[in-house]
Amino acid sequence: MVRFRGFESWKVGSYYYGKQSLDNYLLDINEELQDHTRLFKRYVEISTSHQQQVLETNRAIVDEVHNLRNELGILSTVLQEGLYCIGVALDTISGQLENIRSLLARPRATEANELLQQAEDLRFAGILTDSLVLYQRASTLAPNSPECLYRLGTMYLLGRNAEESVLNLDLAVSTLGKRAS
Figure 1: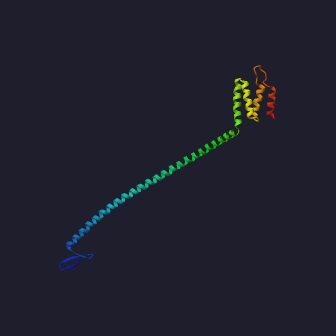
Figure 2: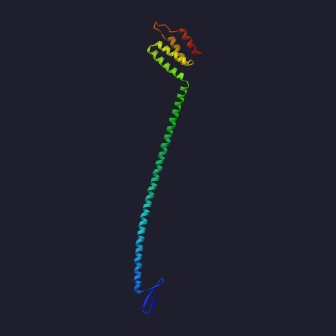
Figure 3: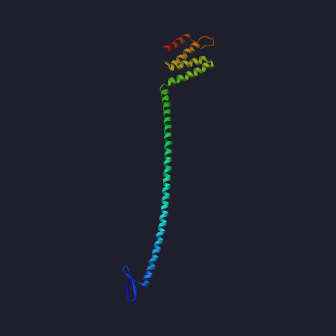
């Protein structure tokens, strides 16, 4: 504080103030300080609010990541089970395709089997002559098939015509003899 002949003045920075102007200056500073304090409090409130929002968002993200990890685990399990089932189905289909391929490789044998089944149906129905024709066609298609030869030979031996006689004993012996050799 500096005194000049009954006048008091204060130096603030590079300015000199008298008592009244110093009071005004202090009031102004106090107002500014209160304004800054209010602004600072508002910034703190906003910052606290933003921090809370960030924390809530982080918690939500962590929860969603956790849920997503669980769902991915479930999806992975379902996918593995699905792939296993697909593998089993492919193995089954592969086996079936191999069977089809082997049947297609020998279509005459497949046709012979169908003829044998039809001949059997006719034989059980008592239509022996037509049954014999189908057995003969089957043995022509598959001449080395033991089943065709056996059924044809049996038909020659056991089949009866209208006069109740053996259809052809010589053919029965020769056909069944092929089977035995």
